Image 1 (cartoon, rainbow, N blue to C red):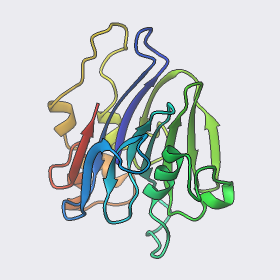
Image 2: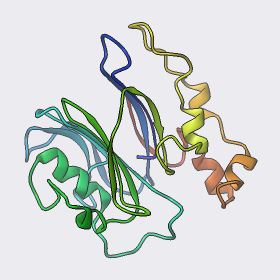
Image 3: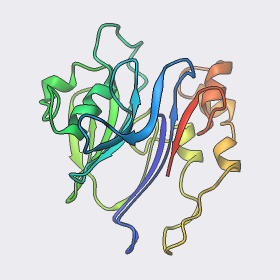
Length: 211
């Protein structure tokens, strides 16, 4: 999951609104959003390579989403998939259902948003394990820190205040707009694949859209 816009307790009728896009190579096998066989209280897509997920909800009232966090070197092989953490959080069972800070360090760098019925939390494991409650507001998340001016987060930001029951999503134009080379190079890397991935919906990598 590589770009997300989230509104938490901003709208009177819609306490939680999320729009996101998962970037992944098409060759990585996955199942679309559906109710899982086990545990059957989870509704999510499934990464068939690792058994985890990138975004999902549970009948217990949990929502969770994870993105890769860049800027801390290449991913290390041999570590569990970040989607496994999400799977266990949604299922409420497994090694990472109630992870310690030490457990969070098992994974390559990540950002994670966990919504429970009473509150929202942001988690990350770099540069150090961190968890914090999110006050009401609108948030953008991509492959940098929460609300960092990452090119995709900026172009995916909600176009106007969420004040009415009608939700307007800037589609398809702002979701297809490629970030400028200046914005990309300011993050310390620049190549054709980077440019392609800088739109919220990069045509060569997109695997799923969620609203």
